[in-house]
View 1 (cartoon, helix red, strand yellow):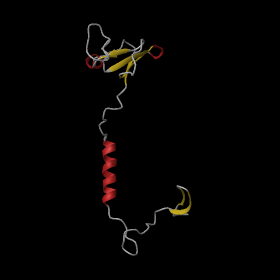
View 2 (cartoon, rainbow, N blue to C red; view 1 turned 180 degrees about the horizontal axis):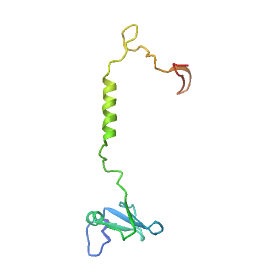
View 3 (cartoon, one colour; view 1 turned 45 degrees about the horizontal axis):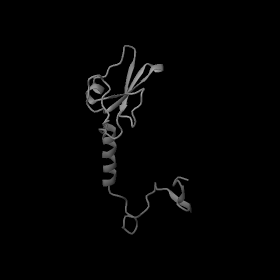
View 4 (cartoon, helix red, strand yellow; view 1 turned 45 degrees about the vertical axis):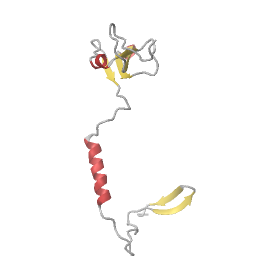
Length: 125
């Protein structure tokens, strides 16, 4: 027997890339990444058949994305990155001796330390 799992569709010999499972109680077909082990109640599908999959009328198809595939950044991700770059590029307040290590007024104050834990007090209090 070949170590490569094949598509479960009749007369299709292409390698499987996704696993289809039915949740009959919810009338849902779940299509996700290829399962680790072949199971009798699941169907392995090739790329073509997984893309063309449709469900019966009244059923919902849930497509789970593969966690190893790189996700495209959203607009919010790009905006957060741009804000972080702007913050890092902004000049910092200089201390009294001009070395850049002066404490800003909004920084918390360390009150106590135990091991790797620190107790901080808000500068407002």
